[in-house]
Image (cartoon, rainbow, N blue to C red; front, top):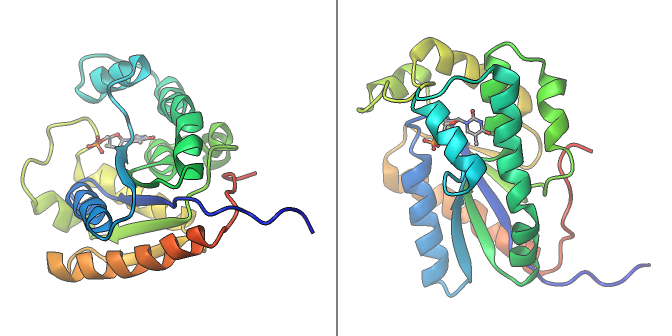
Length: 212
Ligand code: FDM
C-alpha cells in the first residue's frame, strides 16, 4: 500500500523552562551527532534574525509592547516562515536539533491566561517533532541558576505557570529527562533517546503534522 517512505533526518526538539539547560544541551547533542557522522543542524526558536524575529526580540527585551494575542501569533509566524526550509532539510537527510518549538509557544501564552485551544490553532500543520526532549527542572531551581530576570518571562511565578502548561502538552513523542542530574548524565540520556529516534527516521518513518 502506498510508496515506501524514504530515509530522512529527524526533527528533535528540546523544551524546558528558562535556565533548564536546553541551550547547552542542544549544542552538545548536535556536536555529538556530527561527530558520529550524521548530517545535523542546530536551530532555535524564536529565530531572532528574521523580520518577525526582530519584532519578537524587541518585545522580549521589554523594548516594545504588544498584546498577548499579537505576540503569540508572531511567535507562530516565526515558525511558519521556517516550515518549508525545515521540510527540505529533513527530506534531504539533515537532522534538526531545535531549541524550543510550538510547545514553548503554547505553554508561555497559556501561562498568561490565553485559552489553550486558541493557542494551539495557529501551530496546526507545522511539522510534528519526532522526539521532544523535556528537561525537567523545578522552577525554584531554575531561578537559582544565574542571570535570571533579564528578559520578560524570567520570573518565578510565571515560570511555575509555564511548567504547569508544559505538563498538559506532554504526549507520546515526549521523553522527560531530569534536568537536575549532573550535566553528563543528562547528556547521556539525551544521546540515547536521540540515536533511537534518528535510526527510526532513517528507516523511513513518515513526517507528520502538528495537532491536526
Ligand atoms: N517563547 C518562545 C514564547 O513565549 N513563545 C514561543 O513560541 C517561543 C519559541 O520566548 F522566554 C519565549 C520563551 C522564552 C523566550 O527565549 C525566548 P530564548 O532564551 O531565546 O529561548
